[in-house]
Image 1 (cartoon, rainbow, N blue to C red):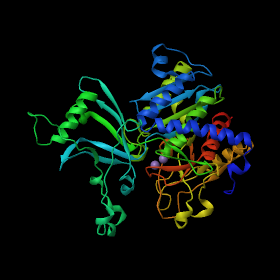
Image 2 (tube, protein in one colour; image 1 turned 90 degrees about the vertical axis):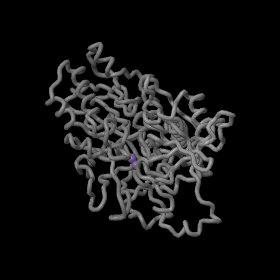
Image 3 (cartoon, rainbow, N blue to C red; image 1 turned 90 degrees about the horizontal axis):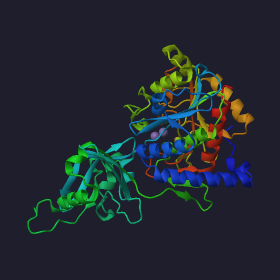
Image 4 (tube, helix red, strand yellow; image 1 turned 30 degrees about the vertical axis):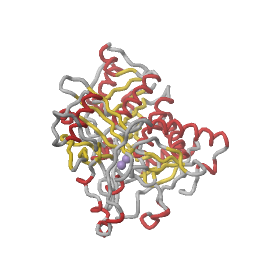
Length: 465
Ligand code: MN
Ligand code: MN
């Protein structure tokens, strides 16, 4: 089962398609490094493909029919979309759901300080990170500052060649003998992840000499962005690795980049959604925030936002709405929880159980279950559902493999799968294998992201037909 390789079976034409798709994906993750940026990119692509805003359809009381396409955005951080099928909506939807948040460092609400003539921004990490991986890297700041007058200042520093970058310092090796005795979890602690933002004191006769470096930063922030120190209170600023994703390997078979988890599934989900234009069953896309911290919050999967959107959709299709219709629709739906799996890493082979691990180049990955310590917290997909999926993917020649995140009791993880399963629908985790997941730069195979795109299209158009 897990010994197929996408490259081995690909003809020249397919290799070219893989490469073209990967280049567009590289652009997507280089431009979309935060949930807000991914939402913006997705909305632009959805609108170009003829999707209209759900609120506009509601306002104009537009009756939706087969082939109509709508989308809805929640707080600029998550987006859902639908293409109406020819089958009644109560018969269920085919849903692709991925998350667009990634591990990173968030700037605190009162972050700016100066010590010994160096100015810093204090951060609080978001999601699961090995803290020692984040030092001595070029970092960028992305996000928004919401001001009291209602204006939103968009911040993006560190991506243009002419932009400055930021960094977190580490102790020089010459003095590190004591540090190197520490456990890896203690080498760099959470409160040490403060980014250096300046070292030039403000000069001027009547200026306050105390905190002159910080005051200079504040002056520059006022000049360049018209923001003040208090405005950090109502800001969402995310510190991420600076620079674009890159092709990796002499053979250019891989992509090294920030945030493959989970944009390497979000992107093919979005592209598949755009391409399947006249589905039998209604198709749906979910690109959701907050997965890395437990799917909480209004923009996370556990929010009512998705169900509310489906309720509105039902009303626009049927001209009426009932809770029973919504429940029937949800329970009859099929979902691929489009999320990444750990790729088998030969350098750390003892952490994997090889015959049940997904591999780079092995195609789309199914994870029947995730969780940890005896599948705890796992969705554990239904065998009958997996059989139905195997059938359509085999018929359409999609190369897939199975994946378990690691050896029993070595660790584990979770996804949004269990949240949609609460509605009583069939859900399975299905996505792309990632090497060094949650590192500032993760790696994937170009062949896998393309094969997953092919698989997602087949799922949207064929499942439950
Ligand atoms: Mn994920
Ligand atoms: Mn993750």
